[in-house]
Amino acid sequence: MNAPSHSAFANTADEAIAAQDALDNGMITSEQATQVAMQNTLLTPRFYTTDFDEMDAIDVSSVREDWDILINKMKADPNKGHFKKNDTWEDVDWDGMEPKLRAEFIDFLISSCTAEFSGCVLYKEMKRRGSNKDITELFQLMARDEARHAGFINDALREAGIRVNLGFLTQQKKYTYFRPKFIYYATYLSEKIGYARYITIFRHLEEHPEMRFHPIFKWFREWCNDEFSHGEAFALLLKTDPKLTESFTNKLWIKFFLTAVYSTMWVRDHQRPLFHEALGVDTTWYGQEVFRKTSEISKQVFPMTLDIGHKRWRPNLDRMEAASRQVAAGKARGGIGGTIYRGLGMAKAAYAFVALYTIPAKKNVVPARPHLEPSY
Ligand SMILES: [Fe+2]
Ligand SMILES: [Fe+2]
Image 1 (cartoon, rainbow, N blue to C red):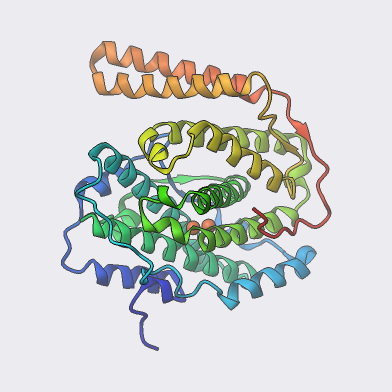
Image 2 (image 1 turned 135 degrees about the vertical axis):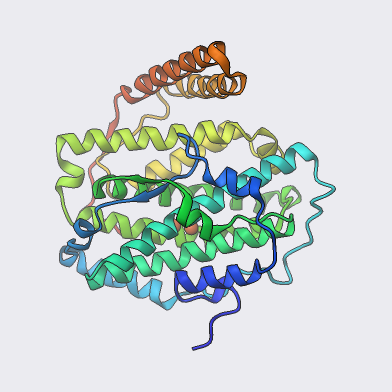
């Protein structure tokens, strides 16, 4: 079999990575971009590792019917070849772009690429370590998709003369260990929130095509449908063991992950005001809209949703954002003064998080079968 010439046509994550490496041949790694991707703070995408044997032991027979439908849909591969520039890709005037916007946009692309690749690395590893046919098949298909997504973002970055060295990241970036159940909660949510984010921007730009300052946004619909399917897979995995969503302790964990994922997204997005302004998107509206869609979707499997209309919700998200700016400023200042300032910022963030976490959640009766179609 010939190796595909572009990651978009790759059948496996390894093929996609090899195709991307071939494109980068001779191109010097952008130290700075890789440094950004290497960062491990509370706000940057991480790489995860887990107990692969425990995950390999999952028995999907209780959700077999929906499982087979989903796997067959992913195997049919409707997006093969999609994640590649075509003649609707317009030239991008990187040099003419307002420098601060350019910096924020590049930061957005690097962090999106790292997040996509983080999924790829985890899924690929599960496929490599496992022997359970259902599980390895699913993770191989998801790794394929994420490698294509990361590859496509790398195509866009390459035009700006930037290269994130994916091979280097795989070897050198720190891995965070999460127990399998935490992987399910966090990954389920990040796939579904990813869908909600991409589709909200796509729909907004359908209405305001004049605000589309880069062609990559045209690819967002098919993109988010991939993320939607990945989220469906995790919903089914969560369904294989009722305890995961029904026990008292796990409900507390689900609420914790909902609060952490939502508030992290809020803080991170508010750090890119020019990027959102260029798209004509009000960051605060966007955040709440993405939370609303994600909450609606997550009712398929989570027994509660966060009360994003509660009077303590918005003020504490804003407090969290201010605290994160204080932490960054303290770090930049350095010295004893900077360290104290930073520590106080962290205490403020923790206080705001507790205030968010203790808002009473809205109970939800979970349907017997989680199946959903993308509907936004
Ligand atoms: Fe993805
Ligand atoms: Fe995904």
